[in-house]
Image (cartoon, rainbow, N blue to C red; front, side):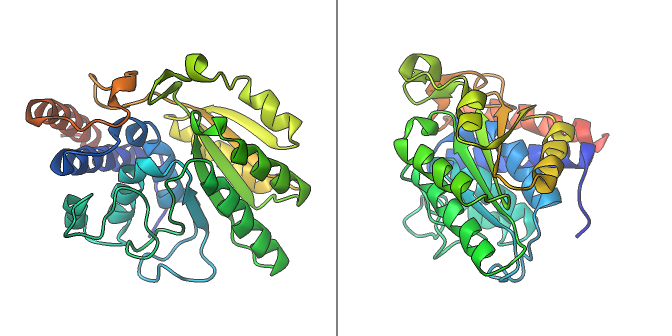
Length: 281
């Protein structure tokens, strides 16, 4: 399919947000806040940046993506469904014992998932391994990962960062979803991680800071990462937790809580209004 840009990317992300919130509401369980904050990033990767074939999910030359903050699987699943990896209707099976759409990414049962994740901190190590394997095999596909700013409190993140720099993995690009919140509150209060740019730079990474809801900035950063040689790239994306649903935005309480029927009705109305606005209706 042709790459999407601008308003078309915004529209696809809005549709994905609605699907993600609907899935979490149906399951009465899940993590809407961080799924909504990273949705624009995941949408840009699958509808513009990454070389993939939904009809052939295990194509050996595809680009790889690892959702290191695996609890935000509703974002990944919604985008994969819209991209054509599996029917959109399957999203209703999220966290259902009868279904295959588990609460965290599952590479064994969900087409398009490149790595099973959930234990925070481990996904980036996997992405480093994928990127190193590609280098050793002289393969030209790229590897992408998405971490949370709460997740970077895990020591394994920095072990992986050291390894990526040692092996000059310029085929690795990592987004950090900097929404400033985690399950227990503000990251600045729980375990301050700033300045993240200086930390990654000290680990010999190429660092880019962007607005994680501005598609022009996301795509420009991806272009820069692709052309940068000799080191991995960290894209620090400033985002809003719960983006797109007014009562969820900037609220740590929506980290891992499903909306009730009344709340979902409001969220659905807001997201449908955004979709109609972007469709020009």
